Length: 363
Image (spheres, helix red, strand yellow):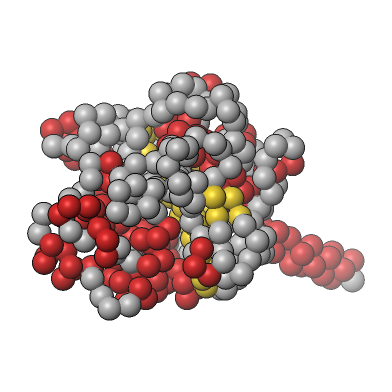
C-alpha cells in the first residue's frame, strides 16, 4: 500500500510539473527588418513610387508586373505572401494606421541604432544618439535571458549590421554575436560555415562592412539547426540600404526576399521537435520612413512619419487575432518585454523604465 501511495503521489507530482516544464522550454526569435514603412506592408507597392522620377525604378513595366495589383489587399499579398497568409491567419499584425492600429518608436531620433536599442532594452535612451558602434550602456532582454540558469548559452545574435555587437555590448555581456562581415566562429562546427565565411570574404556586397541579408540569414539558420538556441535576434539591412539609395524597385524586392526567408525560417521551426509548438516569431522594424514621393528615401526627427513602425507576432501563446484594428497605440519599446513574456520571463520588472508587454500579444 505504501508503494502504491508513493507511486500515485509521484505520478500526480509529475503531472503537475508537466505544464510548467513545457512552458519553460518555450523559445523566441526576434527579427528586425531595417526601415520598412508600414505603408508598404499594409498597402503594398506605392503607386507614387513605381516610376523613375520618384522611385528610381529602372524597369517600370517589369516591377509593375511583379508588384502592382488593383487593390491594396492584392498588392500587399504579392509583396509579402508569408506575412499575409500564415501570420495574418494564425498570429497578429500591428501598425496599420488605416485601421486605427498605431505603433511608433519612443526615441526622438528616428534612425537605426536608437531604434535597435529601444527594441531590445525596452526604453529610449537619449545617450543612444548616433549610429556609431558605441557600447550600449543598457542591458538588453537577450543579456538578461542569457544570465538566467535555464537560458545560459542558449541565446545568440546574428546581424547584417556590424554595429550589432556594440548594441548588445558583446565585450561585457559575452553574448555570442555574428555581425557584419565577421566569420562565424562559435557553436558546433559545420562545413556550411566554411562556405558562408568564404562567400562573405569574396562575394560582392552592397556595403563594405555589411553583407547581404542572405549571408546573415543562412548563418543563423545553420546555427539554429546545429545548436538549437532558445532565443535569437536576427537583423536584416538591405531594405534600408536600397531605400537610402533611392531604388524603390530594389527595396520592394528586398522586402519580398525578407518575407521569403521568414517563411523558410518558420517552416524550419515547424520541422524540428525542439521548436514546433514552442516558438514565438516576432518581426518588427527600427524606424519608419518619410512619405512618398520625396520623403521615403530617408528618416530622422525632421522628416514626418519616421517614428511610425509595425510588428508581426506568431506563436503558440499568441491568440490568432489577425490584423489588429481600433486598439490603443503600442510602441517599439514594448517588444523587449513581449519577447521575454513569450518564454515566460518578466523582463519589465528588472527596470522601471522598461515598457510592459503588448497587451494580448502573448497569453
